[in-house]
Amino acid sequence: MNKIYYLASCDTCRKIIKALPKDLELEFHDIKQNPLTEPEIEQLHQLSGSYEALFSKKAVMYKTLDLKNKNLTEADYKKYLLEHYTFLSRPVFIIDQQIYIGNSQQNILKVHKALGLV
Image (cartoon, rainbow, N blue to C red; front, side, top):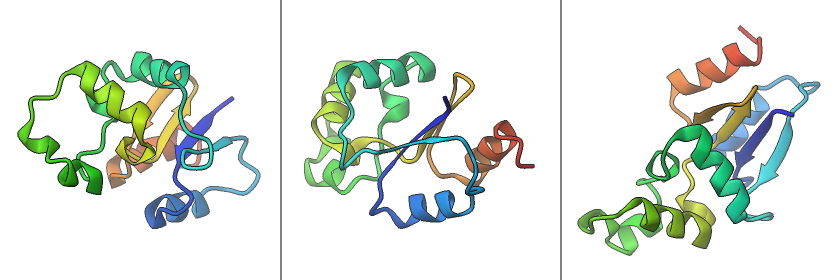
């Protein structure tokens, strides 16, 4: 089944979800209410090719912890992704075993094409 990892309190995620057809077969996973498990992070890593690709450098905690001035490794990115939901770049769609990460207009257009909406 196709899936979306999102944050219910994120305005951008809500806007993207609202634009989707109501009858779309999509499993919704709110990462705050249901934190990502290590196997889920591993699956996302396999599809994306790196933990860094899943990591949001726009997260407030990224700035708070001064991570931009640290030389983060893939292991560090994984650790932070498992520690706190805010580090996942959102939303993440998995559609037919393809991953789409983030909320850029270009990425959302790819999601719509993959779902057959365009």
